Length: 193
Length: 338
Image (cartoon, rainbow over all chains, first blue to last red; front, side):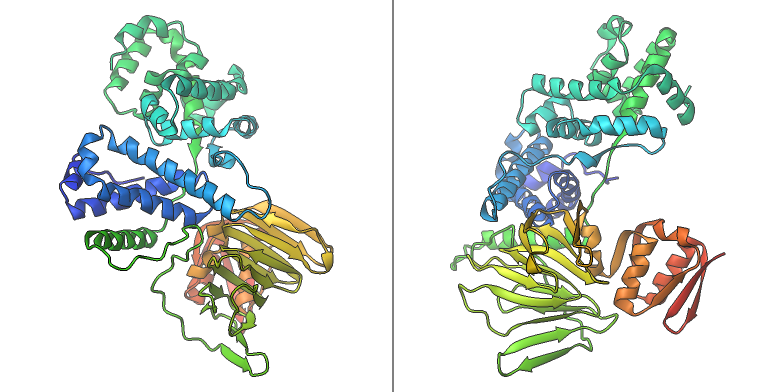
């Protein structure tokens, strides 16, 4: 998926290493693109938001050492910048009335693997449609980006408790659509035992 | 992170509890980590939980996200721009930069206009400019306001040589073009085609008028579409929206699409199209006629990218994917399954 960065890359950048910065730029560009793309198909806005967030790393590199989790900070900053631009864009280009609220995490971005038997898959997909934008985003940050509950909470700007609630509700909703006999069929299909 | 003290708790867990448990989730996310050994051992000593744990694991693993990544050259381009900006910060700039309106600025840099066999006509009476492309030709044009358009093959545009500030910027299109429109205060930008007019303030979109139908796909910004002779009520589109208008039936289809896939023709490639869509595209832009002997192939989706730089390579790729022979006679190609 993504090649990895050396652990001390942030320290290298705060001491002014431009090559390290270039490596970090390329690494995070793709990840932020993948994340931000879930909220908007507007590529121009997305690319501008990514660039702004990444440039901010360099211009604020003196303060990097004070940030405990720069990885989480970057996601959080990017999210803020992207949301701001999307809302600005709506307002300026408003030909009808502006839509309120935060951008939606696309409903069709969270999917069920094809290997799952189709009747079950169909029901799971229907269940996915009922999830809220926040639930989808939380699941993405946790299960795709592999972030901890604390990190997900920090990025989404909510409490850790709220994150647990959002995640549990979503997962339980999915679980509700399945019944055990069907799961046994799933196991057989996947060759697990 | 120790699971030791949870051992007793887990013994009472059902599927719903496991899937919501962060340590369990961590194990699914990082099956190779140290915790895996702990779970293996725990399962051995709690065999009655094997099925529950498998159910929970299957559920979590059944979820996945579509991965949407930018092209490598896009990333490098952005990096180069960022490095320029950083260098500019370093030296105090005397001249104040023009504020960029991020959502509307054209970000394509350094692409050379391809020399084509299209032609430019100047009509002295109204100082209108026309540009037309031949089959197989693509042309990038800059308009009087610095907006950019990429004209696809077998298409033409017409517009005034000069645009007055404060007045609507108008352009007439026949065929297909991709537009990247600069924002210019309150002055709207209008693209007129036979069946509809697209009105924008600053945005990027594609209009495709082929085979009697007109399609519009919006990539960035917001546009209003007005239909000629009131054939349909006006509609406003947001990024990712796609409309297909058929004047014969006045039917309007309104769906969504990943805009980058629809407009990938600008980079001379087709992405994730069905066989029918690819053949139609080649017919409309390269003056070929295809005869598909097995109609069932039409709906088959060709996952991934078909490069259009070289027509022979593209046709070869198609024949391989469809497992068919292509019999060419001048511009007619018969596709016969092997």
